[in-house]
Length: 423
Image 1 (tube, rainbow, N blue to C red):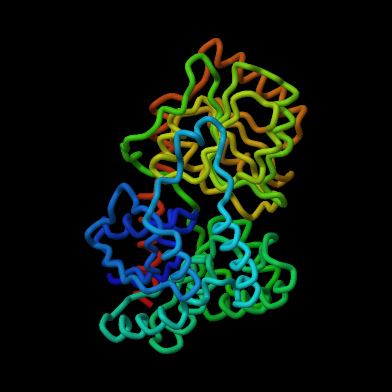
Image 2 (image 1 turned 90 degrees about the horizontal axis):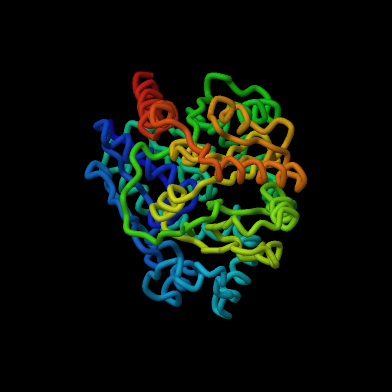
């Protein structure tokens, strides 16, 4: 079997979709599938510490004038985290970075769905060549960004190859600009009708899309959730833990609208414990002021994915904040599950699906995202840690890996693709 993956977000990019397809594509390749990846040539980021399987062939294309120029100005790749960041003093953005973000903000509103659509004409030229040179059994579009969907629509129209859409995030999402939501709804309906198969990460999103768009076939949808590394890569890294202190780790990004750390920060202020250290990895500088006055809170900024896994392994407690929308689930919860560490989950809503996943994982704590119950949970966790009662058994970890590991997800994806080929 030979498949073509259209993935703007692909290593060395470390966004959620890049990580998802890094693991899925390598899982397919290990199972004998020949995977071709059409992706942008990103030179400003360091490569992943673990290379791709030999069965993956990358076709890198210039990302376009804005991102291309920005990469030249950025210079050679640099390590994301520094020693000063470990002291909680993450460097302020330079004037060049502020200018880049300002221009990108404007271009995101000029190009649909965002500035990454500038890649389309250059990627489409290479896409046409690949479709002529290879007999693909399926073309897969990874969303987001939306440019992958535009390319997939073109490929389906001009090649007739079965088209699979991996819709990890719906186009009509709460973080999308209000001005384009009507256009998003129309485009979402179009691609759902045109796609031969639509992969979702939660069953709840299936229900949302069926309600939004009439006359969709139930059989068109399949759920392949996010996953966890089957084996954590061993990479040299910083020892982030501090002796004699409960180490709480959060990896990922905070958001004002649906994954907000305000109540967690309030709980830390309320608890006022010197026995806790909090390490936060991700693009979260704008939330640092919430934690002013709390001892031992450190913002690392963005770090390499495999360093991020090592950071999770150094934790006593892994913090997860649920999304306010119940049809999306932060993918890192699966990474957390297989570490053997205690998880503190803050409910995003009354229908937060994370609680069901954690129900059989002991010990884990699920509380409302409000400072009083969070502070009470932290106090209880601190007492358990001091008495040595944190963690889960090795046998539980292996069971969770078998259930939620990326190998199981890749196997499900291979079966889905084989079904398309038979038709």
